[in-house]
Length: 570
Image 1 (tube, helix red, strand yellow):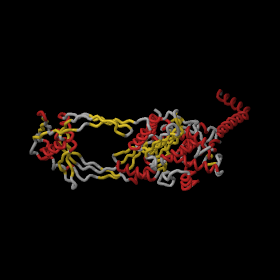
Image 2: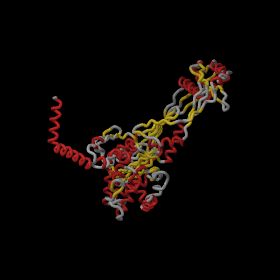
Image 3: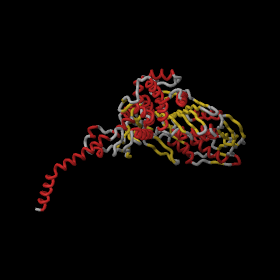
Image 4: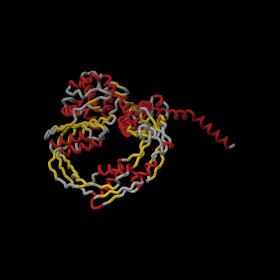
């Protein structure tokens, strides 16, 4: 009876206030929809995560920087058969679809905005990296992976361990084709971090079984039983025991599959080295002082003496395999002093050029440096060699864009892709994503861009029509930065906008990290190429520098920058 009374009371209250309840609920729903409609596009929603990390309210540029950072660190571990290989994802010829990934983080279509509460229900956590591949680079990387993952079968054999003959069973081999890897990787999904992928491999069966390996055993036992004595200066003697002699032996296979006993040269050489350690007299050290690539001083060290190693190795091999003469003599020979080089670079233009030559020779760097004031020093090495440009090509695209604007053909507020020309310029120069730049290349035409930049003094080493990637040189990038700094290449509002972009992008780990000055720079990263070109306003002078690398890092560029500034501004 009490339950019916409460139910009747609530029903009566709702009947009296039904209109107010509906109005209140409707008002809340309208307010929530209004908030959802006003939520800015291109901004991550409140409950959005990237690789498990909250990225709520972050802009396209911020998200693009995080995505690119994750991509640069991403690796792939590929397993096939009983082997695996781990490589950076970028070394496979992959580039991140940054705009696609950021789109997943910011996607909030109109139909969802019109449903109350979806802003709090849209739980997005992007943990995969969407990529596209450069065909030639993927094929090249797949050929290397195929070699790492493939190996032949192993026939049954004999191993000599601790002075004993031990049978080893036959083992399977595996074969993986580069084309299979290309197809597999082209269809694979890649995670942030390290992607663990497994593909099938063709099995290769061994040809020889354990019953075929008994013929050389007696010969090996005879060799292990030899009694060999080595006599050195001052009646020093050495007698290798049976376990030591056994360690020198290997059982090899002839082209016809027959097992034969042979000597492991490396093991005998190692034993002779232990004899030499007891008998040798160390040579001194010749110190050579190198400054700016030239020898400026030398101190000669004393001679030493050591065992005639090749001679003793040959005698030990013969005694072990053939018997006969087993009383051997360790003959001593003179040894030359060790040469120690001390290298340094003076605070001169000669020292600057010597250091640039060193970077090009030992670090695979292409470099050009030019002081714009003060002593006006300059240095370069491999600066005119044309290599893949990475994102530095976007500087040349910006140059053509500014010309089109000056002619009235393009305006900042014009719509482009899912934004405007101004928005695309921001993505291209600050976030350094590719879709906008590639759209402009398609609009202007690759040959048109070539003709335009070549007419303005850039070399044929800069090209948009060569190979699978745009090309440029360190000299051309420095020429661009020099003209940007002086206003002779890009002036007025265009110059100010581009300098602003080059001063606030998120990829400041190279020249900006190594320099003591204010840096406006453009980086480029593609596959294993890492570049940086910059205008540097050092406290003691302004200079232009471009460093293009293959197989290096932004840390290496920063280290080179610190040494260059030490030389130029001691």
